[in-house]
Image 1: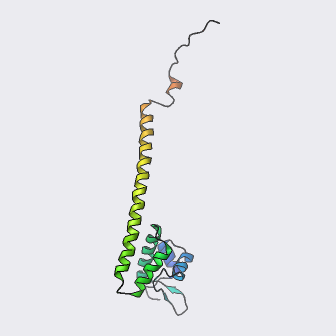
Image 2: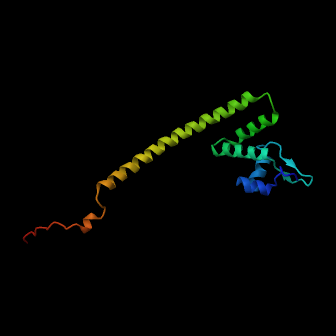
Image 3: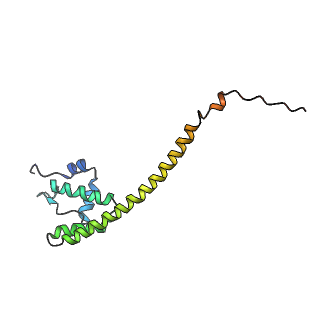
Length: 143
């Protein structure tokens, strides 16, 4: 094993993914071509780590497995399909931007409620001030 090759255990440690996930990515066609040692054990390169990082980000931003697989197929096929790769990534970027806009609107609503409660609390000198303030005398009603 050369210094550029990493075992699956080392990749697990560096990426935070599980062995199962890495094997699944390879089995399901999401990985590029992972080398194997003569023993059959996977040997990952820094290039593989970069690819894992990319597909992890694509998945974390909601790209469906089938789209990640298609992107991997295009990359494995080599030059000549860059237009399709670009279209796939641009479409995903647009979906992510729409999700971010929606989340920003949700965050604005939360911020509005926080401001409301902060102002309401600030308007009171203390939520328990009625406990320590002298109470006005209650006139007794003749019975």
